[in-house]
Amino acid sequence: MIVIGEMVRRAREIIAMIIFAVFSSAAALTPPYWNRGGGASCSHCLSWRLAAETNNVEPWRTVPAHCCSCVGAYITGGQYQHDLRFVVEQILSYADEIPVAGDGLDAWILDVDDTCISNVDYYKSKRYGCEPYDPAAFRSWAMEGECPAIQSVAELFAKLIEGGFKVFLVTGRDEENLGQVTSENLHREGFVGYERLILRSAAEKGRSAVEFKTEVRRRLVEQGYRIWGNVGDQWSDLRGAFVGNRTFKLPNPMYFVP
Ligand SMILES: [Mg+2]
Image (cartoon, rainbow, N blue to C red; front, side, top):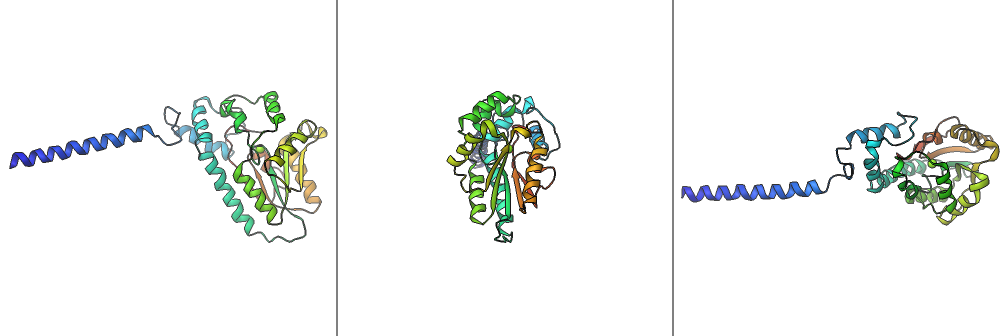
């Protein structure tokens, strides 16, 4: 009886070891998104990304070389879209509480690139920010007018308009060359009913994004608009003067606009 009991105990141990081995293998085959494609742990790159998003590492030209696959995995693995949607939910909670006056002067400002419409398809060819900014290539991409909407922001946009806000789309894209195509691109992607699309005029070339956008906001405030919220993927969208009652930074670890 003692021998049989010992055999049963050994058999249980072996079964437990097999189950453990199977689950360990499965876990190893499906690493969390931050390690997918990243080889070694991406924990340092997660720190970099947090610091970049919180504006603690400016200015940066490219994603650090050792973070290329981690950032690529972040953008394509679902977490980027999750983060965008999370911020949009915060914006909607705030917007719901705003007492809209009904005088047509309650305003929101939304940036365009990687706020309303996405350049992720383009940045795929630039390894999601691992290659430096290439103005000619980006211009060619923008000229195609094929940037898809960022879905969560498109929904935000529609709700702001439905809520009685005047929405201003403000972009550093140059008006002369990209005005028409940008307007058509936005329209095709559902951005219809905004108050004004404001692009960088020839006279404003050479100004920093912060200076250009501050000047745009200053003019709106002088016209009587109350800027309740300001949404962008770059800190240069949200810094300077007349930034609005609240600012919301969307994630973008692919590039930095000074
Ligand atoms: Mg942008």
